Structure formats: C-alpha cells, structure tokens
Amino acid sequence: GAGVSQTPSNKVTEKGKYVELRCDPISGHTALYWYRQSLGQGPEFLIYFQGTGAADDSGLPNDRFFAVRPEGSVSTLKIQRTERGDSAVYLCASSLAGGHGEQYFGPGTRLTVT
Amino acid sequence: AQKVTQAQTEISVVEKEDVTLDCVYETRDTTYYLFWYKQPPSGELVFLIRRNSFDEQNEISGRYSWNFQKSTSSFNFTITASQVVDSAVYFCALSEARGGNDMRFGAGTRLTVKP
Image 1 (cartoon, each protein chain N blue to C red):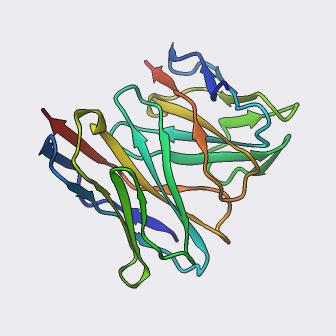
Image 2: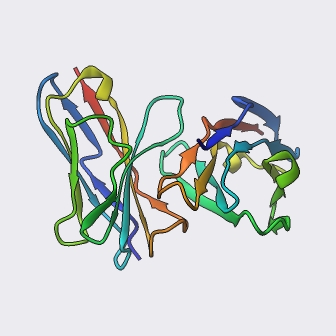
C-alpha cells in the first residue's frame, strides 16, 4: 500500500512569507504527527493529531506555527511570517492508533527560508 | 524530562564487520517505549523496532539484534556482518507513557560501511 506522502518535497520562500506543507498519511491511520529535523539532528516533535483534533501541540515552537487536519486524514502545517531559523526538513508520520505505537514517516519537505 | 543520548556521532566499518550502536536514555517514568529508526541517504525514516519497558528480552531479526538493559538505561543495536546497504543514520528514540505522545529522538549515529 501507499506510504505517507508529503508535498512539496522542497520549498524555498523568502523571510516573512507564509507557507503550507501538506501530509497525506497511510490510509486508515488515525494518528498523525509532525516533526522538524534540522541538519545533523534527530527529529523534533511538533504536534500530534488523533482523528481531527490536535491532541498534543506542545512541540510547536511559537504561535507562527499552526496545523490542521479537518477531515481526519490529510494534514497541513502552516507557518506564518517565516524566519531563516525555520529552515529545516519537516517530517510527517502516521500511526495506526496513536498512543506509543510505531510511526511511519514520509519523505519530508525541505523548507529553505532565504 | 526524557532524554536520549547517542554518544557515537559517526562510525565507519568495513563490510562484514560487526558494529554496535549505543543508546542511553533517561526517564522518570516506569512505563516507556524505545525505538530504533534508520534514515538512509534518501532521507525517509524507516522503523526498525519498538520495545516497551517491561520487556527486557533481547531481540534478533536477521543480522540485527537489540540489547535492552534497564539497569544501565541502554538500548543498544548491533548489526552483524555489516553490508554497504546498512550505511545510514540510525536514531534511537524514547516515548514515555505519561509524557504525551511525542517521541524524543537522539542526535543519531552515522554509520558508513565501506566495501
């Protein structure tokens, strides 16, 4: 079956602009996660959805970051007023039922803020 | 707070050598979960194993084996008879039962297997 997909694969934007990153989880997976990975580091948790609701958004660094999952499937991570420090690979993962089960990751979106 | 330490930043071995990747974790929770992921040059993280804190049995899957020792808070990963395709960055991660739904990853170990 299809894995987690993310679009775009690469995004270059200017400082101050707004960006949206999309994640399409594995079909049937109710849990969805967003992570951010900076060069040479492990992924850093941002937000977790169980169904349509954000069950845990404790990892979002500030209020410029927001994510939605309106129908419990596709999710969009939104970043307002981007800063150069936001440059990273944004990873999406899904899990069959959430909790602490194994997560399956997408290929990521490489965001570069110039 | 939970924390994962992978002290080995980079390891280089020659094909067919055995190699062990170290992972040490910190947690105050009695129930937690440990994971290993592989990130090949293509970039996509690949799940390898999940282990809960109540199961200390070592596990073997083909050339891969994992040694979980609660006494030393370690969850080490050994690749036997390494192959060039094993070259990747390997991440250890921890998730606490009471700590929310995030996985805390270590900084990763870059393994290079030379032919």
